[in-house]
Length: 213
Image (tube, rainbow, N blue to C red; front, side, top):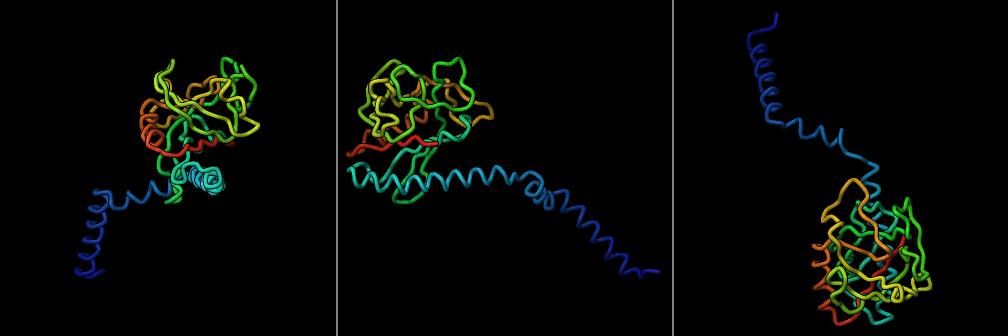
């Protein structure tokens, strides 16, 4: 038979456990094990490492060409369009400074499944490659920035009127579904363009935009 002191100790231990559970002290650790998605984390981590690798290459390019050597824009077209894939990369801090949603071209289809890329005039596709972000102007969709293709894969960007602009169909935050598609322009949300505007407008040197897969 248990002594009264031991029974009293067991009673207080049970009571303490119930009290702590009621305040969620133990519950807070459960979601970490049950809800954490290792695959999602690896995708996010690998995307960052990929951007970091591209940034290292971009840094050599901007120094050689006399572009802005503090900030560049990186767009990873391999990511879902509902996920942030337009990255503002800070060379000095060697990290992502900002990110937002961006469209890809539909290649003149009603809705493009998967990814296609092109460089011919009228193709309606995204062109991979490095771009120089040019001057701003007021166009069909409001504020827009001219883009000059620097590679063979996007050499016709200026002729194709491929520009950096915003559209209301692009959400301000990430979504689970795919977002709208463009006719080849890297189109961002109105709010995100306003965040990019001071970077471009205040830069004394051209800003590099690199679209890759």
